[in-house]
Amino acid sequence: MKIWRIVLLPALLLALVAGVAPPAQAFTAKTTLVALHKQGGFAGLADRVIVYTDGCARLSRRTGPTVDTCLPRKEMRTLRGHLKLLRLGRSEAQPRGADFIKYTIAYRGHRVSRYTLPASWSPVVRDLEKTLEKYWAPD
Image 1 (tube, rainbow, N blue to C red):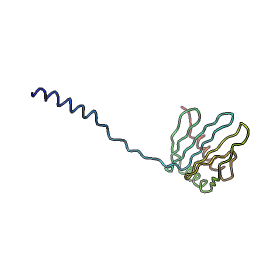
Image 2: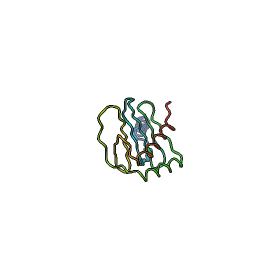
Image 3: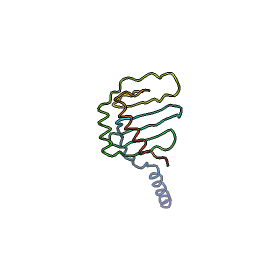
Image 4: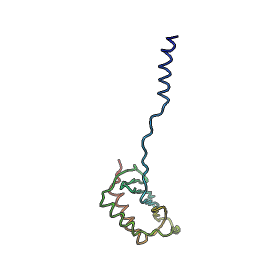
């Protein structure tokens, strides 16, 4: 009977330890400050820039890797200043033709798409495009 206990107890203990999942990693959800999706044209653009409230950004293009980076404080200050002046308005209907670039901005719970850039959009789009050019680099 003792041999039975000696063999069964370690096996049972091993089975219990193997079946217990390790504690979950702490997940910190990031809040999006602004997102730009630029798509279309004959080149088939599909650029995305997501800037989070903590100053970090996720950058991606149609081809290549997704890059996560954090922006310098000066760039974040400039972007936040331009965002204060941003007026989203309403989405614009798709124009006739084939070679149009669609800009979609998501900001403060609103998502609006435009084919022509209004005056208040230009600085924000320019900032986000510069961020993509500066920090996105394929492997």
